[in-house]
Length: 381
Image (cartoon, rainbow, N blue to C red; front, top):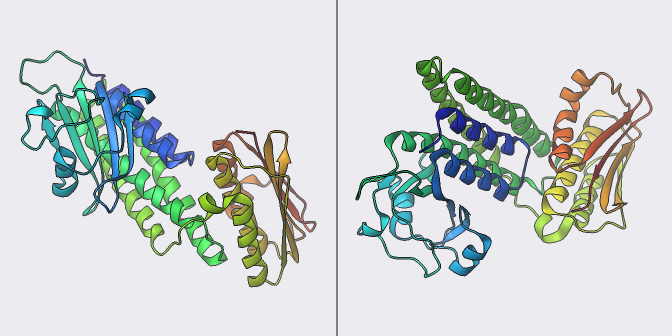
């Protein structure tokens, strides 16, 4: 028997929380897929993001072991039911996917799927991916589908959040090399202020609906409609931030080379002297390196635009099995105790969130008139 709305809304809240922690894209997608499977009590769930060549750039599954997934082989192509969801952009609810005329079979190691529920993930007119579930865990008469109309509505709500996650992924992938201060400032403002607030509102609205579902189902339904509306607004804001951003170099070049290149550009672009040293650093997991890069960029933006510094020094070095980033300037400084004012102006809350999201810590040392040092430490992978 499927779980009640309270459990489903908790799953939605979990997916939102994962996004707000700036996890790796694949981790966010896994959270959405596992939430969908738990919510609808299905044996299998998957989310496919198509590429431009008839296949899938990413395909995340839940309910299949690593050994099974390896035995299945290459990622699927866009054919059969999957192609229908992507190209015709309509939901599919089937009693037995194997009896559908579009069914084209699957590899020998593939699990046997019967009843099926799938939805396209849409951003306006663009189909960004397909989210689907199979084999509902409930008694059902021969030839009938275990997935209900209510299941389809709940999956549609999760599909809204999947659209946010995928748009957010594009934003991060295309913003990794941002080194010009004006572009960095715009991106930070749009992502930190507009999108973070919208995701926070989404989470609170989902929690409110969960609290109302038993005593006032009608109001709970209204809150769920608000969740969908807020999700659509967040996608619009994220899509606007993606426009004209350049692709990343972090994956190809690593943290040290990426930082060195960006700091050389900043040193040429500003009157302040900007220097960099990488001491004994060794590669870390991608999520930690990206968090270190983002905090360095935010701290550099603050120092070069707000502090009046003549010299800004950035260093990354090994500390135990992990690493430490330090950004030091000789600018005007501020009072760290004025957390509300400084946090809003300098993005300290955002930097702390990035550090916490990868198990790290952020410390800020500053005295008015005597400069600022921002230090971020992350543990080893």
